[in-house]
Image (cartoon, rainbow, N blue to C red):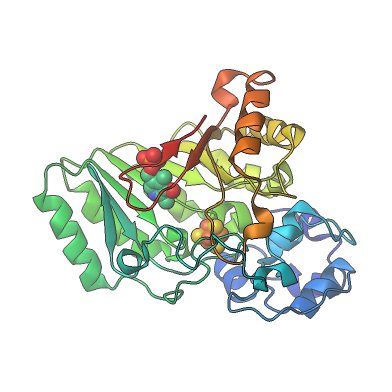
Length: 335
Ligand SMILES: *Cc1c(COP(=O)(O)O)cnc(C)c1O
Ligand code: SF4
């Protein structure tokens, strides 16, 4: 990543320079204090009491516009007083999946979803997991062995999905162990990883990770999470370049009021993703989690935006508008 990506950081710049290629340094040294965030951005930001802490890795911080309070990237990470207003219909666990999420896996038909870790590299204010208590929990080696034994014993399992939290918080050696074992299960046809890490800390795409994904003997799909075209800077583009053509790169975004709820923004997002070899896949309606009501656009606006995108973009760049309903065996596609 170029030093240029860290310009505009003001007082934090000096701290950032040395270890900028080390993703684990970035994980450990993310911004956790609203005052530090304000200082870095030249904004007087007020502290808001919250049980979902502020967490902003520095490579992401570097993309937030200095001095701009309504920056769409800042809005995704800054705790606002509105989070503490109770709004009817917005609940702690909108997908009613907390009991399974604290365990190892959830099964869709033919697919095993492994909640590898509760940890993330960034705390997105609209996340449906914001009230979950398992934030630092990880599957143990014994959990993984048991999970992979189950998959090996069940020929109906076609896809292994690593999810979280963010599975790429796990170190390469842990991923290597899991992938090596998964590669030896002949009926497993597909490996999928849902992650925001390459977007928020592009340094996470280490040469070792690239090698691991390329060496997997069956198709690998990386589902990224980008909501705004400015989240994709040159560092993200460069990080993903070695995977292009080797790994399926898809994007799953969330429709967020004040972030990407304008047709021009979504259009620019699709083109920017296209430019770096990522196919738009889903655009999620907000899960109605307590504390995130101020991000909700409503379903009608989502449908209208997708309709407008169809008039402006090649069909393959229009994401599917989707929502998740508790207890349903798959997402519901609305448009
Ligand atoms: C939607 C989703 C899936 C599975 O859904 P597909 O329709 O097969 O893409 C798996 N994991 C996560 C985290 C999802 O959001
Ligand atoms: S990266 Fe994904 S799982 Fe993690 S906080 Fe953001 S939305 Fe939630």
